[in-house]
Length: 105
Image (cartoon, rainbow, N blue to C red; front, side):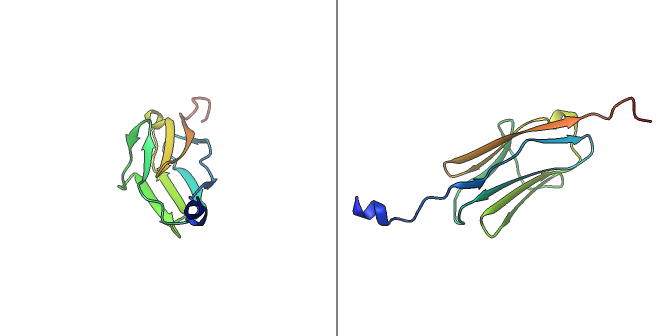
């Protein structure tokens, strides 16, 4: 037990993902902050599908603690649950993409 007490403290989520509403064509950004860097197996998901860095999906990391996902030029079909996983840590939030109202002129 003494060895366990002296082991490095496990990372925790300091600030989790927040629900985000955007309009079609806008960008949606999600940020998750961990207590310290070095957590392995970091992955972003949208409705159970793993996301990867490309033209419309920007994944970045700052100081090994702040992990950011930006979805560019979103469409209605992008609405769903965004999930951040880092090791055994998980944070999720809803993305709602709203269409342009026909009342706007």
